[in-house]
Amino acid sequence: LEGLAKDKETAQKVRRKVRADYPTGYQVSDIITIKEPKIPLVSPFEFSAVDDGTQITLKGVVENEQQRKKIVFQAAQKFPKSTIIDQLKIARGAPEGFLDSAMIGLKMMSALPKGRMVLSDKNLKLTGQTTNQDLFSQFKSRPDNLPSGINWQNNVNFDDSLVKAQAEAKAKAEQEARAEAKAKAEAEEAKAKAEQDAKTEAENEAKKQVATREELAKKRKWLTPEETNKRLDDLHKESGAVNAKECQLLMNSIVRGSAIRFSVNSSVIKPDSFDVLSKVQSVASRCTNTVIRIEGHTDSDGSDIYNLELSKRRARAVIAYLIQKGIPSKRLDAKGYGEKRPVASNGSAQGKALNRRIEFVVFEN
Image (cartoon, rainbow, N blue to C red; front, side, top):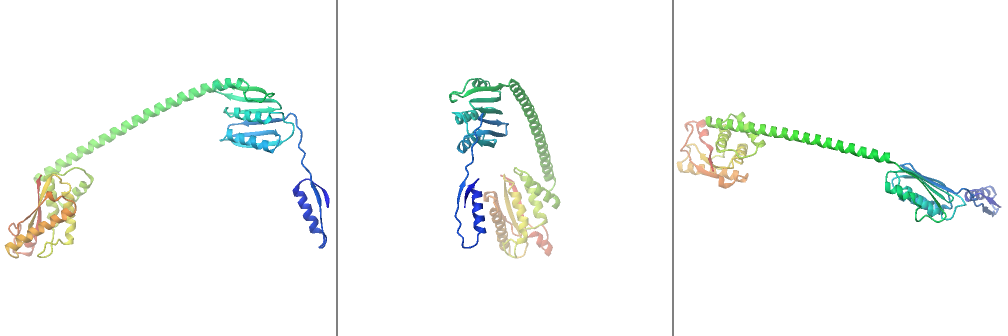
């Protein structure tokens, strides 16, 4: 098999076809020559690049594939944010210094917002607009490194209208920024005033509530359960120390409805009393400028000496609980009275239950 193919792919197709069609036993050999493509000779030899702000379009002809790659690479380097559109073809007829001139043209065009460069034979022309006076003056002169024999044509215009528009836009932006800053300052001032007014109102209301509670403390020895729970909730939301009078009122109110209970003939606190003690601890932690005396009392069952010691041990057990919960020991004192200070008759089970009690006495520190 012998002949001339237009390319390698065609030659391979022919070889496979012949071998497939001949019967088994035949040997096929070939001398197929690949036809080399003919590179056209063009005149004028022209290369152009157009920058529209988003993409660079390369058109025209170059001498070879290596030259095309160098020009595409230069475009990508000088216009990193633009898309490069390569429409270049290979041709013969390039003038001396063509590649260097093309590189210089791309570099100079990259200094413009938008532009066009054309290298036609030995003529390099740059077209565009600039708002930079120095750059405009620079383009008037022939580039120092442009190869000899290449003619330079500058069609770059100085656009002063754009400079004016930019100045006006800048002035407008500054004015808007000042107006925005003023509005923001006024809004912040109004917000600060509203916050201060709200804070002042809250402080006045808090003072009013404190005064009301102090007045109430003078007239009453305890609060209702509802009043007690509400005041305990308020304490969690407030800051600052509670004075001795209000502390005493709250302590009385807490233990009035729910006594602190112990095991029989023991100073072991019953678990159902921990909720009461937790409330006591919550109030005690806020009465920071006070000393609290824990007083233990018993009924009349047993001897005087036994009951006295039992009341002391129970008072100390309450102190131990409060210390464990974070109340400083120096603010706590224990006192036992045994059966000496009954609040009801010991002649009945109900009266004895009332006499078995823990009381809290609050003093200014």
